[in-house]
Length: 256
Image 1 (cartoon, helix red, strand yellow):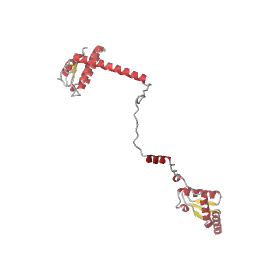
Image 2: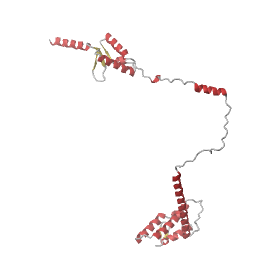
Image 3: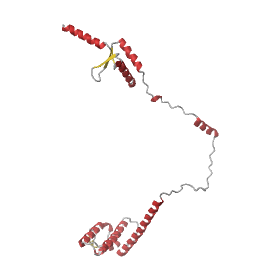
Image 4: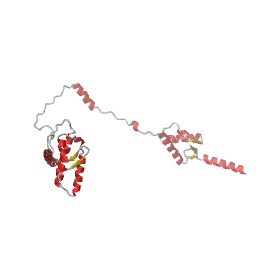
């Protein structure tokens, strides 16, 4: 199969592939309007019709399409001189083959450099001036001795102690609330624990509750609460039982 005689039916051109290349090189056909993908599809269809792989035809077509793509890419840069404008298709193919060979040499050179880099990557070079290079004389600007002395005094002074007072947690003693609750119970038989916490901080309220539990553990008080989260009633031991006995006697008298 002769590639140059490939019949094309494109929007911008209809005819053999050889004629298209000639018209493109003579700038009689705008390469921007040529569908290169359609050319490749047409070649693959023609190749499928033969039901055999023609390597020579494939190689020739690849070179010609590559040259056509290069010309189309060059058309994107209007200011660049068209070096292949006056070349025939055979000359353009030879020029492309020459450039491909040059690219192959550059690629091999890049591979050689990459191999050298991989073998030399464990070697390190000294960064800095040469050991025998003349050292420039460093001259200090005039200094005030009194200013230097003041700086030294500041460096020698002991830094002030950092205060951690703001980080301390101060809790009142539990004994303070024990005495307070016992004094209340000597004056009154019972009191409302929540009312005694008014104006206290959360830490003081926690210590007051610990004091309340300590009195209950010592069986000095009795604690009652009508419902969850209801006010806590604190009374002396014996007051609750006396009140119960009084209500029982009254009920018995009424029943009789």
